[in-house]
Length: 384
Image 1: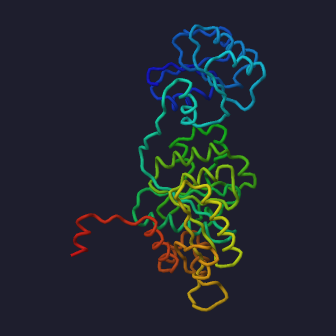
Image 2 (image 1 turned 90 degrees about the vertical axis):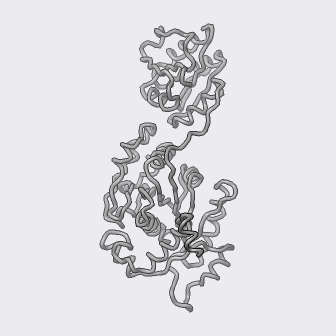
Image 3 (image 1 turned 120 degrees about the vertical axis):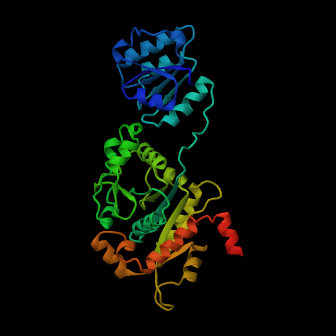
């Protein structure tokens, strides 16, 4: 596409086309010039038209004029509702498509590829990052606390830049636990997700005081309905270019973008407490998540608030694994005093109670999920 010429009709399409087709010559046309555009038809390869950019009649006349050209370009229309007159005019074009708006640059490139008879290779990542998603099996199982402590453990290991995203957009608790205000106003960027870049990401995040950045939305009972899947995916896509490790605190109830986030995560961690309802919910949730993950991948199950005593009313680890129908991948010892102290003081448990068993168990879980690679020289010395 580096030598292609693209015409856009619509204010928001110029920057999107530039991202989708790097190196192409992108020109914008004002809606008032639709009837008699001052362009050379034979040099155009693709026309992008926003259906709300002008009157449907003017758009239909533009399409009819394009169909009469000796070599009509490919055309893509972006919008939610396509007027009948415009739909009829589209049948006159040999190469055309209609896409829902908004969409990402890579989605636009993939849609244009068959129209232009070119292939679109998967984008080569410029930055290697890892993403872990944490989800509680039931409310109050400790998913947010574990996500915070995992972020602290990775930051303490000097694993690069670490970020925690609280995607409980209605009533997330991560900002309250850490004493940091919610500054991720994702709803304001949802209308134009393609404009979310590194600068917007920086404006959304705040230092947590524990070595990682926190991205949390202000409390809003309508927060989920104000944010689109395109905005959430674009936000995380940009974050993967900036941060080395990303922790995501996922809401327990499914959202339109939950499946996309799960599929894009390197690890999915399901947190369950040691009660029969929680274990049954964790078992059902595990099956649901496995059905959505790529083939061969399985979520990790972590038992929270494990009692130190051998005998007690709570199920043992063996009994929990029997109820789950599989082995668990980690366990966090119960330490109510340390957890309550940290929440009340504002900060992670590793900050206020670094000797807590919770911190030790989280470090063990981090080492299990992301083992430190041993250099060849160190490995040979250890073997000797």
